[in-house]
Amino acid sequence: MRAYEVMYIIKPVEDEVIDGVVAKFEKLLTDNGATVEKTDRWGKKHLAYLIQDLSEGYYVLVDFKAEPAVVKELDRVMKITDEVLRHMIIKKED
Image (cartoon, rainbow, N blue to C red; front, side, top):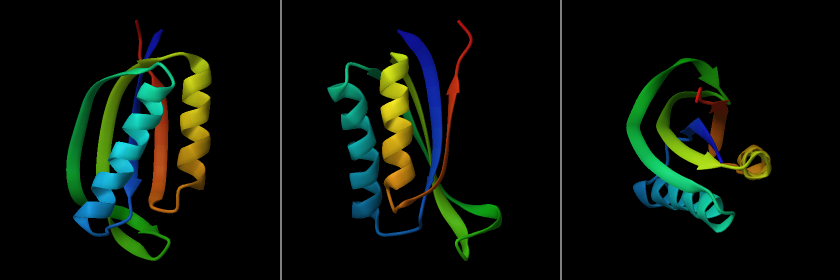
């Protein structure tokens, strides 16, 4: 398995919705054989520029180990999740 990190920005919504989105992605990773090492919630931050007419977003950083097929599925699901404004998955150096 390879080490990755994903940073994603969630629309500024209620705490229950944010918790649900974070849990959804963690469950997707673990159900597909990945191991989540750390989930770091940065909280609500001001965006550098407007995204979908929003000026704030909730930032989350997740470190995990997974196979490339799992990363591809995570990317696909993040693209179709309405609450996610932006995301970026990076492969870490070994």
